[in-house]
Length: 235
Image (tube, rainbow, N blue to C red):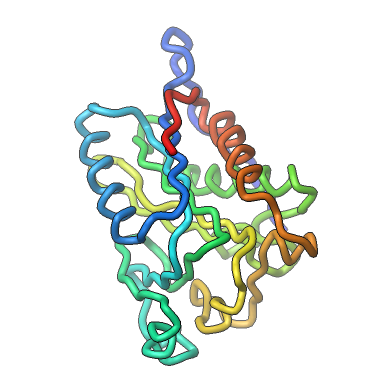
């Protein structure tokens, strides 16, 4: 298992740490979150807001990335919809994944070009945020060569799928399974990876985890790795 160290570009010594607006939003509809990301990305490209991290959960939602297709569903889509899930096409990289209650989703809307030398380095830093968050809960995790996301043993515990627009502004991000109902992943070939199981923090620890504690740890780790200081927090 790989554990590459990510390296964000250091901030300008004269400017100090760059502000990062962290918004803890709890449960948010997927379409609403997508609209908000687009709105924030436009404002960020114009320099009207600082880099921003949205932390939230979604109602049951399956999303297909730019390369995703319905052939990655193992259960009829109509059955999933009858169970209350929605299906959405997303403009991120990757294939199909699931978002739902008990999963911590992080959407950074930031100027990637200002903080990183390339997109790969940015992705590694997102993965590192999750790896170090899990370590705080005594869960050993890392990367597997050839695959995105974060893994513990050979089980995927967090997905990463991003988009960086022509202005260098990011959207989408990471999804960490905390208390997620893992049945939802049995209905898909998660991220197009056959033969690899999906797990959660609760499954690894054999007990539910405190969501508020996870949010607090992620915020602290994110700010340190991204050389930021928090401007404000909205709930």
